[in-house]
Length: 373
Image (cartoon, rainbow, N blue to C red; front, top):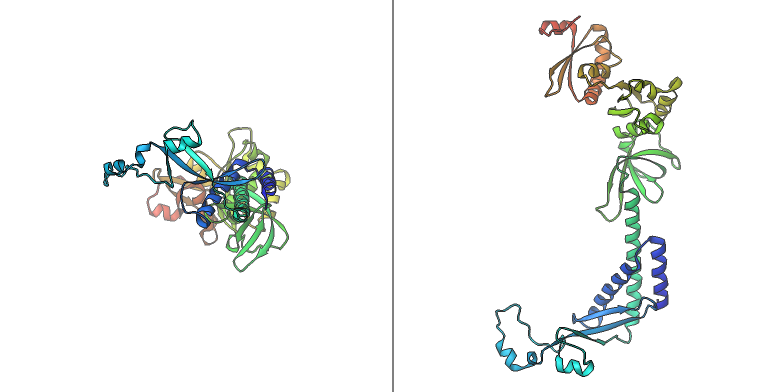
């Protein structure tokens, strides 16, 4: 790679990858300085100069101009071996003021004087180094671009194409990057087909390793929330709000919604005309049931709503600070309130953030719990 080719390559990656050309030149100079010291001269007082118009590369050694007396024996006798700041004259790094002014009369103590020391075969090293630097900068730019595009996508919904599969994971093409969808993060019982587009929830984005790591899920409770936002315009514009979501992926979810506008029915808005909106959500969930619950600031009302389809509930808040409650139900509604294997009660507890203890009417009476029949 000659000088012109290098400049052209720098111009190309600057345009395509959005890298500042000065960043590439600085990296190139640092890399070449290291290569020069390794292959030709281990002295540290050398620098690389790249002509940014022609791509020509030259190596210079530089010496600092010091007072004449610093090169004398008398000066050496005055140095204290214990003084870490004491500087001993070294002809490799220093030049006396008298000698410096023989080359340039305008030089003063503290200035530097440069001498070109470019090795004859340095072009070979420069070409190899240039390729390495350009590849490195392209990788860094690509990674930075990916981070800019996907770094803020955590907790968001994306659409990708199923490309590969191994024993534990599906690999989803998200466009410019791939995400990993563990099979344990799929909805139980659903069939994932190669080449199909699917909706996925981004549960984690990590840039601390060698590459960008994007972890996906379809059984995360956030997946339900994003589906609702996707299908229900009132959620997107803030007319209807989601208070909380509780999910047992593949079986049942509960979504608590509310509106600050008394004229809006938040539950009805989520269901849609002839159940059109909720139907699209249920189709995506492959049979998972969804209960849409109206949130209420009164925890007694909210808990009763959350335990639907059970009815005729008596909710007693036993400890507001610890968020504990007892719910009294009649025999006909007890099994509905508990749910299969305790699912309904468990999801209601997650939804309301209350510890809920469900008692039958007779049990409550025996325990002396006061409630109205």
